[in-house]
Length: 415
Image (cartoon, rainbow, N blue to C red):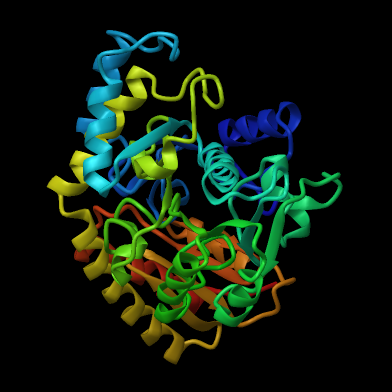
């Protein structure tokens, strides 16, 4: 444990997780019990501002009343049918989500990783049946530093040893190229067996790396020239997080396959989706892909309400405005305090780089002190802290958060 936890209930609950749970996460030493809007409370009743938003799943805020009411009502009516039967909610959701994002078809799944796996399968099948790639020869180009999930296939093309070490043997069929390097992508696309290019418009887990605008614009163009599917993983960047409905909307480009998850449900239920036009999606036939829970009535109903909230409450516009203010405020702190090195991001997906080596515990220790002062954030990749509050945050709340960050900077002594 990183610090002495005096409260017996907190200690007991953390010890239960440590004793009975797999040690696949390293949480901050806080036990949360309640959430509302941008705030969460621990079991002692202490209040915090949430600056992680469950990795951008809670864009609409914790326990949004409209979303939770939809969840309750649908759970009391019909929860699960499997896809062996039609249900009264799925078609309504499919029409809504397709029109919302501008696609002809959607394949509903549950988690972001499942949606990435789905997109890979669709791209490969399209490659064989539409592009004419020889069977079992299809390749997907991916980027170094990517994070698309934790399944065995996905970790096969990870650059992070924590993700892939001792999980082999690995799946073949992936070509890794540097992120934000258009020449490397052009070279890889000379391989006629490439079916798709899988990319995050902003690499979130890698430290909120925002590529040059021209990179993604050129990438889409050369994918088209080479008859290769442009596959955008917007699980974290989508649903208004970056100040537009999709991160790609900043560039006015459209993915051939769009992967969504996280905030698609407002964080109250696992909902993910892959969207594409019919010419791509029609390669999937009955029995070739599916999920018992994918497209269930609760998921369908909740997702419609969650997306309505994004539109009705102008969350993309708010994220754009608040993100600009936040980065400006962080730059003022960078100019004032040597611990902060730089800030980067788009909308309300931002990161501050700590002035220490990635192997240090400085960012972790700083986040513990932030927690003590009432704000929750988490390091990513050692010396980088991701700051991503719910998109409902207003300017007063944002400035309260900045004050907590500055107070922590003034008090911080790295031991």
